[in-house]
Length: 613
Image (cartoon, rainbow, N blue to C red; front, side, top):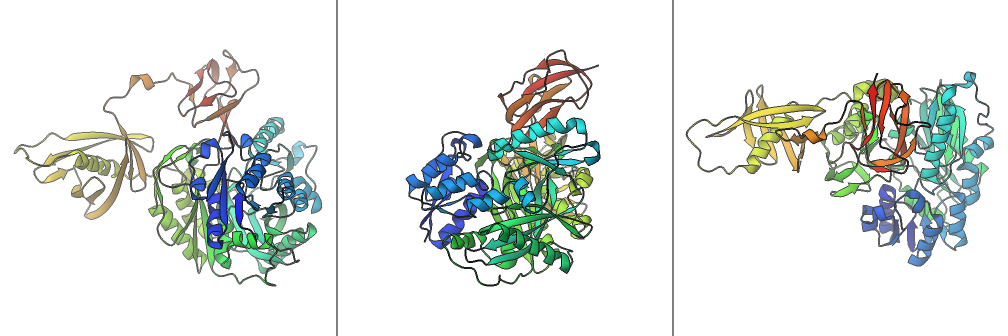
């Protein structure tokens, strides 16, 4: 029996495993980097062990340090979570060699399937070697790990070498393994997967299908179970293939077999020898705790001969600290508030007041709705996300709500090209025009001391806010009866709630201010000074860092005086385990280059200047 379990991971998945451990009466051990010293997963664990350093390569990818931490803390078992070392056979062997229980498949099974190149060979498939124009488009893919890291679509043969180099660097940073391979890129298929659970007694449960077609940068955004619209024959086929793959490597524990479905046919992609991020939708439909089942299997308990019966439909949305309208750029800063309406499962590694840093994945949480039908589950999740309080950095919340309500998704006609087709429409700003007025009135109520009023009209007060990239000025005035604004009747106003009557309809605005940043319902605003600061102006053609991160590369031969064309890649930033390309905004001459490899930059830092010619 396992008495103390260490999770070799961080954030949301560590908190998720610890929750089940508490229910089972198992003590928990967290490992943490210096950047995570006050992280939620450390606070909720019974004990924690520091891994000195901040980057994944120095901490969560150091299997030797994690094994030492497990032994030193008295743990008798290790759960790898997902990402980092979850599919590293060498780490699994080191855990077992230390006399600890490994909550996962055998190292041999991991070795056979965790490397996507070996998995394809096992399934009778081969990666591309000598790529020609006729093979395009192709997908460069990391052999280890997942989550969209180390993946690049190549449509032009001239780009292949650069994308291979970028994918290797990204894979090495995220997984400690820079091996990549090339395969044909099938566009606009559906991403369908089968959850399996296997014990040490030969029983394998195929736990239905999931659809994970809504993806950005090859990383899943919305997932659901069961996958809608599949024929009964296709469901049986992918389930049989998943069981066959598991039996081929004597698989034990939870795993996922992934397929790309096009024209009614399933094409094997890979087998993930770990728990998936999207496992909660399967848990909801089958009424299971997959982490608890992983632990029981690791303890040697047998599964029942048949899995439980599936009930209803579940949909999960991943909430990211990122700006989808700005090339999905990750965002950092203080998460002031994160709350979801009742009835929605929220798996998260953050709580109110936590800081979102630059070193790790930008996922804040996963929101999951379960209902008797798909339509009801989608409606519940979209409504909950719309009403959730998410105060802090920019997130993809609005994108998620619009995606869930898009007719292509509601009709189950989505595929992996969904965001390629619809991103501009899904990210079109639709700010509430009355949000700035509500913010100004709440601010006025919060600052005012209503006592003696003069018996003369006051001059209108003005307040400026930045909202959705535009400046907005609002006017209101104090009167003997309260606050008034042109064209709108102020029904109620205090520091946190404003009620306006617009065209005969009352509307409520909940207002929360954090310094100059104000949240009005779901609209974020920035209070602006009356006069702009001239020191913040930059020369035309200035390239500013869109996010905090590290300069990992500058284009070969790029120096001050170089001629560049609009769209040419100039340098690369790494933030939250992803590399982001910074390109020339215009055709011209590079007149300044401040970025150097290894440099840490903050948002708004001047990286380079291109003078247009």
